[in-house]
Amino acid sequence: MTKMNFGILSCNAKCYSTRRLREAALSRGHKVKVLNTLRFAIDLDKGSPDLYYRGQPLPHFDAMIPRIGASITFYGTAVVRQLEQMEIFCVNGADGIVNSRDKLRSMQILSRHDIGIPGTEFVNHRTDVLPAIERVGGAPIIIKLIEGTQGVGVILADTANIAAAIIETLQSTRQNVLIQRFVAESKGKDIRAFVVGDRVVAAMRRVAQGAEFRSNVHRGGRTEVVELEPAYEQAAVRAAQIMNLQVAGVDMLESSSGPQIMEINSSPGLEGIEGVTKLDIAGAIIDYAQEHVNFPELDIRQKLTVSRGYGVCELHIPDGSKFVGMSIADSDLIAMDIAVLSLHRGNKVIPNPKHSRVFEPEDRVLCFGKRESMKDLLPERRKRIRKSKVQKLDTEVPTTLVE
Image (cartoon, rainbow, N blue to C red):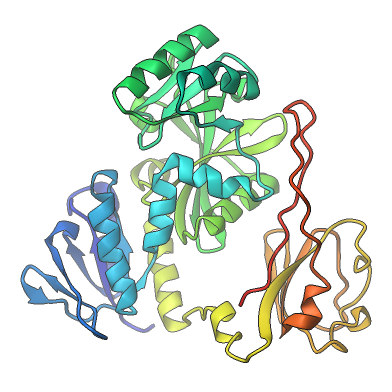
């Protein structure tokens, strides 16, 4: 096994998650150092981005594991972004951390994908509050501070008038809040799925205690091991991938319509989930980082678009498509000089599929070829149709060619 030099970005070397990551790296024979995120100096110069740590040039690291707390998001992500410019692999990148830290931003990103989320509204003017409450299904509703963590800033309002008063009060103090549908059938429970890479390595159910509706462990919630159904596992992995996170704690509600993504945490704590599952989750993170360093993932969309007129696109094959039941060889893709790089089916990825592989409904196919040839295979952009919350239609956002 290749021995590596890992860095852990953390302002608290003694906290459980940081200690466990350090122990997991050492137990595998790696070198590891905990680095205080706030002691970096970012050095910017033409063609040579650099970092100094405690006044000295940053030594060589194979990979960094960011543990960026909410209170230092701006500086912490600036450090991570600089590491990325220096081509040091970070388990979670700056963009993913920023996307997940803002609840509104993360919901906006998720909303354009076919993935379950609770109905959510964001308004600024007091006259828009009551209509927004009605659009998410009426009271009771959840009110959330956009940048709250660990259940802080999450309020359950029983009536629309109480909700409006709370929102008006919070907005008067310049607090931005979300209005979100209360999923009553979840009954004070949620699921935390811990995603590493392209799989869920552990999951637990958190159950609120007493009159408390928030199930967070920091709110006194009880935890129990849960065996995830495939739909919940797939939703967790997809949500992390959409957020561009390789390590994530994905919180989901169990609704009558399936998993509802509630929140995605880019620095999920290890103590609660390792304690209840008895799994070495810290070790899974270290193993993922080591594997990535040994076999770095190429940004295929950049590497394969250097030839003029060529590009990469992802084709979605819905039920009823002419491609369903057809093999790659029979689909005319090869004749059109279009190469199938990978086929995504559920939570499985089939790289370089054989030409005899038959397409199934809901397959997603990553292709490389001439843009002129591929553009006819993409669905036409459809105008957005306004729809009521009662009769909500699924609309698909077509994939566009990458320049």
